[in-house]
Image 1 (cartoon, helix red, strand yellow):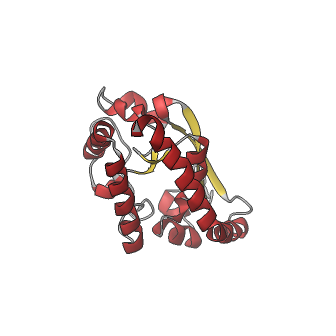
Image 2: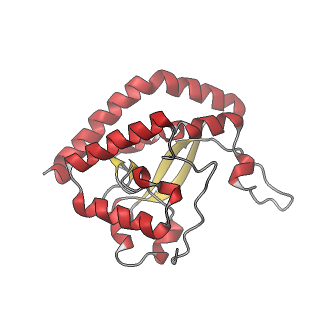
Length: 201
């Protein structure tokens, strides 16, 4: 019952409340990025969602679009802006994803949405992570995220899928808030990025 009905109800109500509470902060961040990123406030990217259906994930744009002499984007750590580094460190770049949750693209809690290019590299068990909506935070995020291997990360995603419950979601939610407050690595992509998944790691 929770998985089929109440999880979605909770997602919509809690996300709407968070958006309302965080709206002054969202406006401030948007104004800063408007001037810093030449009016480009948000970052959009296609990701696979529930049952591998495509959707556009929304984040605050924390990197510029600088390229090398061949026109190739510079590495992430060379493109992240000063404001972007602070926004990422506080996990504030994830706030616009509350809109994805309200739209039904995502859930507050679930496996993080990765890239379409990884799908052909998954084994049969790893691909099951798309049987639930992807989340802003998840069991893998509160248990190491970028400090653990891809294999372990997918293992934690499947554990969540098989044990999904209101109590597990609440545990993940509270652990996420605790890590954000303590500035522990829920989102460390600016300082310790994961290596691309190649199907073996």
